[in-house]
Length: 150
Image (tube, rainbow, N blue to C red; front, side, top):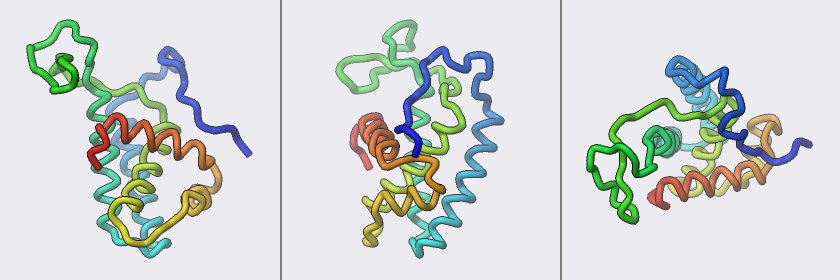
């Protein structure tokens, strides 16, 4: 059994930066996986749309620099910080993107589908590539990043 998912340091893999093409490819692959999984688990396909809404909003929030530096004066409404309006591609690796999408789907099931599925069902659905602790850590990151607006 592998150890829980740990996000690589910010400078890890700097030579292989995430590209828009990567994100497009990964999103297509994860969308297909999500639809197949929804069918296999007899879930409403709307859960997949909700899951990708969570994942997209999460990535979108990472694409903006909230350092309070050179900004356009747009207040983002969070403790007086200013948000720059210059999106960039978020630094995310393939494994993290995969876990993000799987966890977003698990979260969408918990929130919007009356069928109760355990995290173990998602661990099985991904062949054990991620352990329950991976899902718990990513779920918390998603919820915190989205301000618990799910």
